[in-house]
Image (tube, rainbow, N blue to C red; front, side):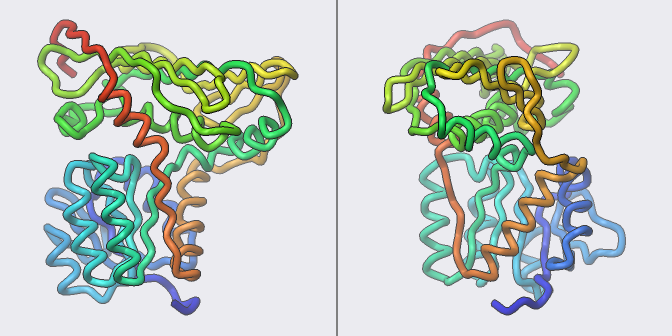
Length: 312
């Protein structure tokens, strides 16, 4: 399409939309927020609908950002793509790998762009780390992604349901950084998933991976942590220890800070919308699913451990 402003609709007005999407859209002159569709919320000054079908029928929009839980994203994406709308998928892009692959085929069929976003890949330290790792020999990797679910996802029961991914809803952010930075692809070799007795999704996980070059990777994911979050990846290389800290915001080499570009509070999502606009202008899609495939494989291989019921 031409360089005209892209009229955008958002589906699912929740915390992440208010915290990140709305400020990022407001800063991007390439988009105009034209409508929202949400069962229980709206945005002041913007047309509001209760469902995506009503929004698509009533509004002349070019694209939609789907920010509802992943279990419900596929049906909404199908409807939007078949209506000729470009689609942005919040992470994780869907509840299964197959459904997202089919959406990519549908986008191609209808000549529109589909963008499976991984916001943590746009952290200030991530591409710098990727470049450094391309010049070093990797020996081992340790990923630790721990936080308090009561702080970051209070009373969000969809996360605990089948398809909600549980601890992998945040943990997949770490995997998205890992798969982006690794010099060669990785696969799961073993996994232990820990389920509360009253939940259908795990609250913690320990996963072992190996790259096709034979490098061992350990991953620890836990939603029961209290105090400070741990969103870190340590790469042991022939030149020492390279550490991505704070979810991609900070980089250390042998315990010394490496200079990275300074990001604003909404920098990752600002970059996502810049990327989405570029994909639309070029008429292409970006649907890279390595992080979701690793999570799916962990479920396939996992030993299951049940612990006491968890109530948040």
